[in-house]
Amino acid sequence: MLQRFHLPLLILLLCGASLGLFVHKVHGLGFPLLPAQTTDSWIVEARISFEPTGGPVTARVFVPGEPRHLVLLDEHFISRGYGLTTDQAGDNREAVWTTRQPSGRQTLYYRATVAQLERERQGSVVPYPGPVNLPDLEEPYRSAAEAVVQRVRERSADITSFATVLIRDMNNTLDENMALFVSRNHTDRDRVQTAVQLLAGARIPARMVHGIPLTDRARDLQPQVWLEVHNTREWVAINPNTGAVGYPPNFLVWWHGDQDPVRLQRARNPQISFAVTRNIQDAVDVAQQRAELMDSRAVDFSLFGLPIQTQNMYRVLLLVPVGAMIIVLLRNVIGVQTFGTFMPILIALSFRETQLLGGVILFTLIVSLGLAIRFYLERLKLLLVPRLAAVVMVVIMLMLMLSILSHNLGIEHGLAIALFPIVILAMTIERMSLVWEEHGPADAIRQGIGSLAVAVVGYLVMINPYIEHLFFVFPELLLIVLAMTLLLGRYTGYRLSELLRFRALRGHP
Image (spheres, helix red, strand yellow):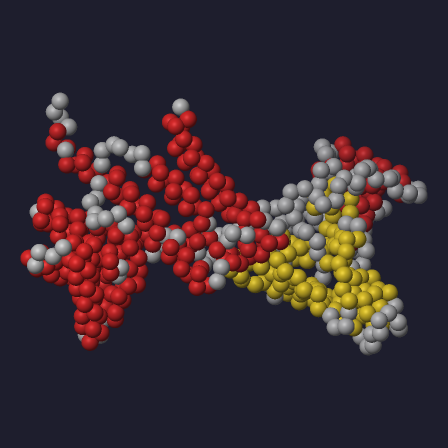
């Protein structure tokens, strides 16, 4: 019983391992399925300047942490003569610059490269803080706040809907109770502060959020203010103007809370400005950076870590198993007859350099001339090994003659004939002559044409840039090729050529 299911279980194991790693690299890490695919990234820069007042200076600046739908591919802290540390300050991540004796106005820079995540991070970094305390309001604000909360609660179903209804009511200043808290000249920051206060009246945790829209070539950007409420599972973003749920696309959360982004010791007049520019990067490079930041082990055995020459070699070698599977399919299922098992795929590799038409012509010429000389050698009654050695020598001389002739005629494709596998050509000529003698010229020509046809099919597959990209970026797909080859190895049914050959017998018992 175990022997019966051994091969199916092995095939399922190979396919499962291959597809599991493939799906993780595509959906989890963002490796592209198409060659030469690019992805958008943004370079975000914060410029901080201030004036020291004497003595050692400490500058604390909020910087982005781990946004849920974006990833920080790279970041740089640019300063001169400053020490730098990064730390977590409550809900925020901050950079701390320190120096002992600054003079003149100081300028610091923070620069980060940001890219889109394929899937948004799940969950919140900050756990549920619990119900907040009621705000300490005096009359008539206390009664007005209770009335607002009661009215919103009647028209909402949960925490998120409560916040959206509240924001929409804040836009309606006709309500007398709401008019005590909101006026038309209030800024977004004022509105979010008011919303946090009113949500506290319903014991709902809420906080102010500041972020930067990632646009193309924007300077002197002002941070946008948003509202976040905690629904006991995660923080949910609310647009303070419309009540819509969720951040807009390409929005980078910079810091949380009602604090200024820059806090100074022994310095004054802080100024911060933001700039963004869009950048186009190779999708594979972005995926590798993302994998390193996510500490994924899937890229530890990636081919991209090899030297460039080795990478170029494997771009070709990884296609050989695909060609081998094609040979198995064409021989065992279709019934195409060829000389040897791997001769066609090696000839197909040579076609990559000679191009298809030139390669077919050169291959046909060498085999035809070599076959004629092989028949002459047969009359000399040579032993097998000397005869094969003579055929190899003749093949090399024929290749040399064709290269010189094509060069004199200005046909550059003929120079690539040296890339043909010499021993394979010699063995092909030897096998073809034996078939010619034993089964006749028809079978020999049929197998020769079959070998050439399989080589052409293999060439067309191996020059396909999509197939080359898939197997180089996702070499684990070779496990599926191996599984399919093992599956074809158990095929014992009729070949397609046999069905066509014996089609006349279908109606007979």
